[in-house]
Amino acid sequence: MPTHRALALPAAALAVSLALTACDALDLGDETADDTGFTFGLLYPQTGNLSFLGRPQTAAVDYAIDQINDAGGILGATVPPPVVADEAGDAAQANQAANDLVTADVNAVIGAAASVMTQASYATVTGAGIAQCSGSSTAPDLTNVDDNGYFFRTAPSDLLAGPVLAQRIVDDGHLDVAVIARADDYGNGYLNAVEAELNALGANVVLTETYDPDATNFGAVISSTVTSGADAVALVSFQEGTQLMAALIESGTESQFYLTDGLNDPDLEATIGAASTNAVTGTTGVAPSADNPQFNEDLRAFDPELDAFQFAPHIFDCVTTIALAAESAGSTDPTQYVDHVAEVTRPEGTECTSFAECRDLLADGRSIDYQGMSGNIDLDDNGDPTSATFEIFHFGEDGYEILEYVEYTND
Image 1: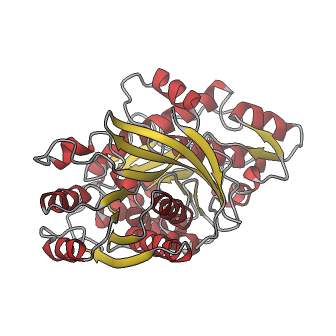
Image 2: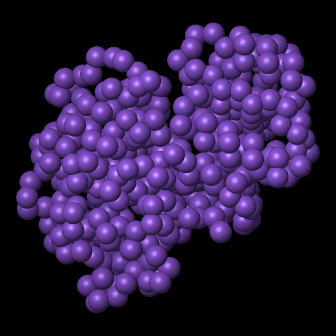
């Protein structure tokens, strides 16, 4: 059974490819945006190396819309299914997909999934005066993007996650640490946050190394890591990290692995395909999460085939927060409701936990503090959550498990 504790620590290419045609990248279904109601656009990876995140994202959006409609819709109008577009883990396609959503005249965009895809698409969305909220993009650089106040996220910045990972490494008794990361906004931001906190905690960072995530050979990184003498390796990566792990395991390294959310995969050992049994036993990681088993239970009841929940609470919160902002503003126009998005999450308001409850408080003239399914997000002036919950996941003798939940507040 996982435990729960609070932690407050100091805050320490563009790929060239053919974009799909609009009809391939954009699924309008039977619904398109119109001027009488509120239509969400969903920019997510239907294909590509992060497609495993797609199902939880679509389920969370659909569930949030279902809850909104059960309560009477946004401003009394039923919300149709979202207009969906595939960012496919490719920057060029992500921007094309964002263009398609803008052309569809949606009232808000949920996504993209990865920070790099959000970086590739936010200017197109926010530049068109459309609010965008990502529930899974965590790169620190997204805090200060030139978005005219139209970009928000419910997933915490890696400036919050990095200290939690560093603390765990030190708590486990490791003081000689190598930090290996993707050479992109996600990887560099996370690496810097982990390194800074490890130094603050008195650990010895023996190696920091970045790699091209599109490379086919990671030999230089493997060699540097093996010869570094590290007793722990923090790996900031997505699925390509399985190749790095497999190579390090085959090299005979005795370093303990520490992972980030990009490799939070219960089937990690099978994915790596290492020859030895129990190859990942002892591996530990940190991922944005929610200590909210009731939400997972309710979402699984809504979508019985769903078998992963990563970032689902955060995506749900993106949809609900924007819907409440529209209710607060009395308008579905992003230029009118955008200033209300952070406002409906602030602690000065009355706490509420559902669209219906919060909507009714707004109707009574009350200010609200939406308590999200992912926790108390409390968005700041940059549209970032100032507090977050992280899960410490672990691969033990009996397989994948969650050891505990850690609350981090950026104070």
